[in-house]
Length: 213
Image 1: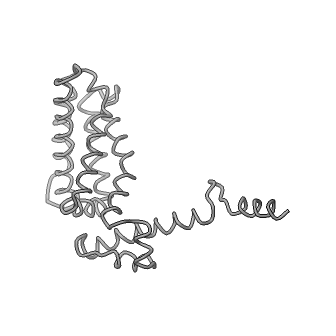
Image 2 (image 1 turned 60 degrees about the vertical axis):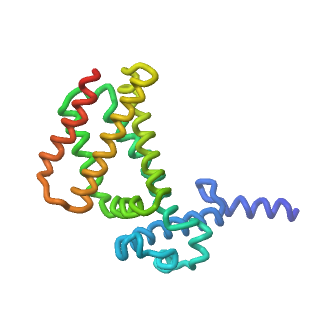
Image 3 (image 1 turned 180 degrees about the horizontal axis):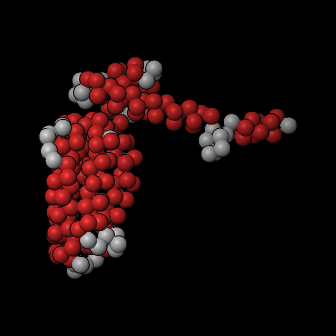
């Protein structure tokens, strides 16, 4: 009897998504810490923000922070992991068979510029961490490498081996160049003509993608 009651109580504690109450609380605490971290990074800068600052902003203890994250760099890495599907999807869209012209590539470039503008504060925190945290830099590059690998329609036009490896590297350098450009224009606010920027980005990518079609 007691076993069946206990099982029923445990089942009742599960949410519609299958989480237990403890799991849901843990997830929510982690979310609070992530949001508090980026608020703190914006106010203090990445380097001047401590685990204690983040925990206090989240209404938690320093010990609670370390239960969820080994370091503040891991908070940034988690964000990178969360946005990686969007990064991959963006480059798959660029690589899609229906991207057949400079005009459609330009639409893509505009959407990327809009994304960086909308999320510029988070990108700023990631860039600050990137400059001082080797693990963040490594994880960022890994996302770009996966994005390049995801452009299979383009890469399949090149022979296996050195030829395809060189083309993959070409894609990676274009992605890194795009990141730097967006950092200076969207995050740092360097004055620029937005439409000219979109034109240049589209032309750079189409010069590579269109030439291989």
